[in-house]
Length: 194
Image 1 (cartoon, rainbow, N blue to C red):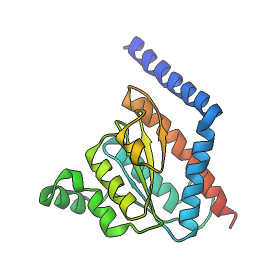
Image 2 (image 1 turned 180 degrees about the horizontal axis):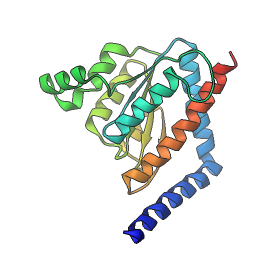
Image 3 (image 1 turned 120 degrees about the horizontal axis):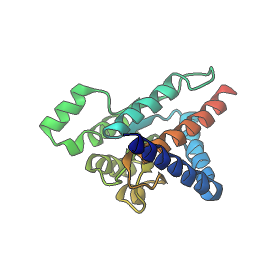
């Protein structure tokens, strides 16, 4: 058991080191660009909609709580909705249509041009995420993708995509969490100064 724990800790450190190295080349610019996109949308009365499956569903809720509540500073509440939280919508859409439609149906009902869809799929191929992202693009919603595999479907249809490339979903999610905490911090700092 100790060897397995040691292996997992080393994998996590290596994933973070890989991300740190990528940050030195293009990652910092990508994170700053994502934060700028969110800031511009929120300044123009847009809303950030966030979605993902499994652990990424929790990330969606986490991000929305950081934006609506606060991350580290006092500032006004920022418009964000996790599309993963309304069990009545999720289950009725999955039952009456298909599971693939659970997020796209909400995008259709709620999102407007100038809003953001922040979509998580570690595989980059989750059908319900892809359906939501495609619809979002059609109606003028900016798509921010967070993936765990390079050259995925989600990456190809996103306006901007952060790929935490790892064969282990948990490692990708750890990198996603670090990145979205940095993004939330940048966004919050901007609005705390208003």
